Amino acid sequence: MKTWFITGASRGFGALVAERALRKGDAVVAAARNPQAVADRFGDHPNLLPVALDVTREDQAAAAVASAVERFGTIDVLLNNAGFGLMGAVEEASAAEVEAVYRTNVFGLLNVTRAVLPQMRKARSGRILNISSIGGYRGAAGFGVYSSTKFAVEGLSEALHAELAPLGIHVTVVEPGYFRTDFLDAASLSVSPAIIADYAETAGRVRTIAAGLNHAQPGDPAKLADVLVSFADAADPPVRLPLGSDTVAAIEAKHAADRAILDGWRGVSLSTDFAPA
Image 1 (cartoon, rainbow, N blue to C red):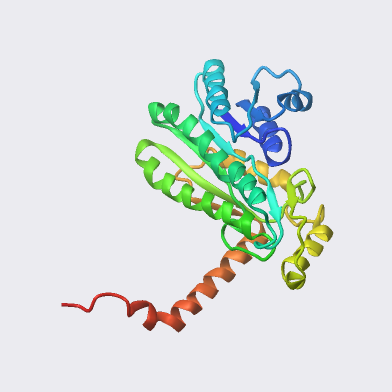
Image 2 (tube, rainbow, N blue to C red):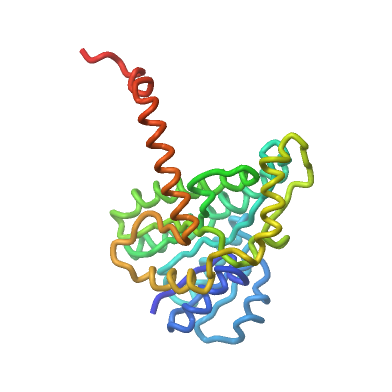
């Protein structure tokens, strides 16, 4: 039996993974701003511990992890799932909006990870799954600030992967594409109220497309949850796990575009080294 610690567990991917982990017989520490929402969804389950957690609060992260270890003795899998989106051109986003999304998506992930790691290091084992996005691999108009937070998650995950592998702890950054969750609803996606007409054909067009895409996304969240629960048992897990045909297509397209840059600008790129002795 594994013990999962899942942030943002009251809905979306977090709730679906919690549901499957419990069904498998694992223990789940379901962290949410409102733990009552977790209790209402899953009922009184012997392997479930709902805990109050605002990931932006370092003290709450420490308290939630302490409660988890007291109840189950260990944390085997950390799923950093809590986060939200911000839509709008980079210039349209206010400083307060940028700070808020970074506080949750980046600093919140760090708060929880730092709280869990001492226990995992002591056990010399553990899995950390950090939910990123297709936007964490390539930025796109209209989601620039949000993508930048997920780029940060990607970089942190790669570094953690290198730092923790010798200690028996595996880190993977999960890159979902567009899945049919409530991510594009107001509860999960903040939209900058400022609109600059010059961005009508770029970020403005994305605002319109996103409204039409809501609840018509190609990805099946139930299948993603199934994959993640099985992935927790995978031997030698990769540093990144792309999920969804749109993510695969986006990664392949970026690889091709980067190859074209290297081919076209190789001489310039190599010209900045000191001349060989």
